[in-house]
Image (cartoon, rainbow, N blue to C red):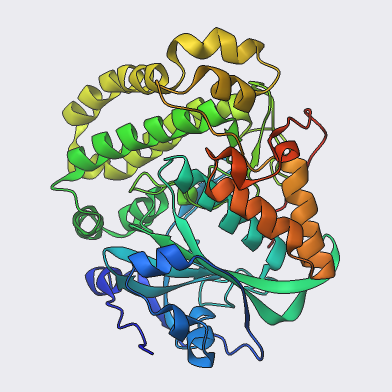
Length: 401
């Protein structure tokens, strides 16, 4: 069995942002979900990941780096936020491996425990698996572990949990914002570390990626729930599924997150919010761009959004607006000439599956739903009832902190 040899490309490129962490030694970490196809893609030894040494690695016991970043959270700027419960292990095969919920770091906020509840980690694992299966750019979940301990959350004492997240890059709009508070030199280093030739290429490319991503979300009824600038990846991947949900109706007011009391990140606000976030990226890059390039960029914003909307919504807008269920509409009419998914992680069935796992240790329903949404175009991947609409029932999601 082979232990992975990870590089530390991001920490080496941006030492100003990387804080070495020893990791947390959990007493009895247990693997509750493992994405073996993804492990194979990354060249990881599945048998070793299941070993005691592998569990120590997957739970962060071997250490890693917590990364600094800033953020606009619900419209308010926080100049230093950082990975308060996340640990970047390193990278392999062109992808970074990061833990979420793996314990306290130098960036942990006062009064927090740094650990996730198992429920939101299971949500991220299943929903990100679905999003990848339907072609949405996304971070992916390699594994979910229980820590062997408990945490106090809205359901009382529940098992602690860790999700092992895989991404092309964990650099965010918030990373650029933090660098901009430090120096132009550091901002330029972030631009280069993200793979861009210059700030203008970064701004235009990230805008195109994010507009396309959000329009794609909306075609599926996806509501992210916490579109702060630290949850906007420069790679264009969906990141942070903590309070996400799906709306069955094309309802602009649909909002499910317990921490979004004003509906800032409601379904229909997502286009405006991503444009607002791109304006914050432009602000951070302004010293490298200058007024002329920013003015030229501003003129491209609406046409870029219109192109993304036309790609994913287009002539189906009226039909989606009138549909009782977005997924049924997509299945009957297709998406851009391709079939629509049969199975999606519908809110109530996902919550019931998570509750059974989190509160009773019963993963039967969760694994059944995971199998269906992992192969969402195959009618035999799940039972027929799993494809039925639930109705737009009251529903609240929690991020797990």
